[in-house]
Length: 170
Image (cartoon, rainbow, N blue to C red; front, side, top):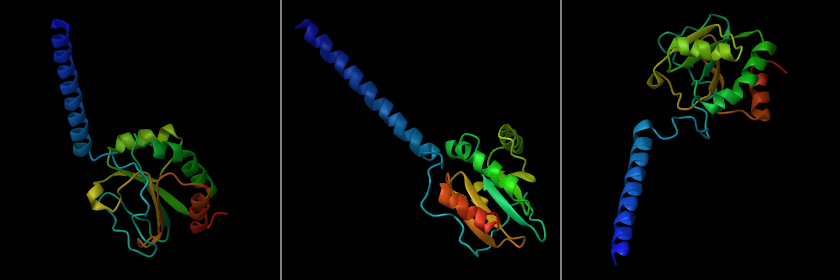
């Protein structure tokens, strides 16, 4: 009888601990915003022809297209996409790359350098100043801010080809 009582007490403690851990996990997920905005949404944040509102700290060059790349150093999709971005910048010379993120400019610069990516500009921005909601997000804009195309997440081959077509790269 004594062993059964000890077993019930142990079982109650284990159950209580499991419930508490689950509650902490759910609370943490809600508090941090879930998957930290790295999931691939079904729709790009900007439509073709829409005007991109340039956030503070970012400037577009007159007469030149810009490739705006919104990344986060801890994003697995960003890491997996870096070879494509490096290839893209090597193939085309008509657009300048601007890397944006919510991390510090220094963190973003170190992150880009670790992948041999040399952006023309790097800016730390407030996510609320844009429609960016996931990383990576790639937006090609004309010098007046008109969106040529926008893509979110790790791009498959057909979407990579679409980016190249919009930039005039075969």
